[in-house]
Image (cartoon, rainbow over all chains, first blue to last red; front, side):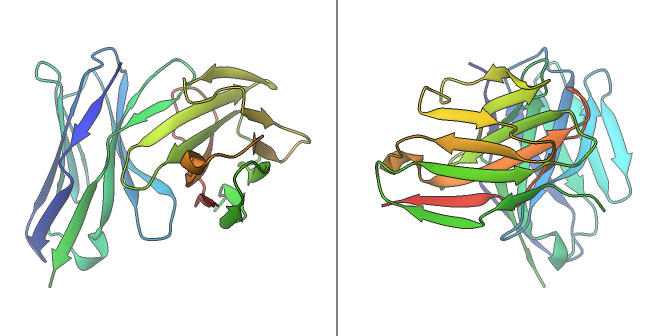
Length: 111
Length: 113
């Protein structure tokens, strides 16, 4: 079946850039998403990219998509302690909007 | 800002008991979803609901599970006879369309003992 893989942990220093990587198997997914989960909270959509794009920038966030390698990344510039959270990569699994998630990458930001 | 709300935030139940998890989706949304996340594992799709019927479901969503939209605002997930392995965080989500942003609730942590 379709699968999404992410590394589980990333630790960076405040002010550095963070890069969270994701690989997926379903090449037919039209949208790819990054969700953020803070402790005790639900899943918040951070950004998404349409499959015919290879880059999308939104303030401190840059999403890169390499369709050939089925690789998605999220770069957070000038990472802050408030960015500490779990980041989930997700692909669109079907026509009804169901999402296929990775296990999530826990980002720890050290002051 | 409109949000998806879920109740209760935490439910403890005995194995074999029925549980109902409740969700109030955003009012103008048309698509509703349930996901679950077993501790340490991926967030997994359970079911999608549109136009008062199930539109898609995963292998996890077996006969023990059912969903209902009993009135114009609530969307519920019922587990008929809970098993220990049903212990997980259950997330409800809603969206305006199949390819649009899904808004998630804060989740209900279900613990089966």
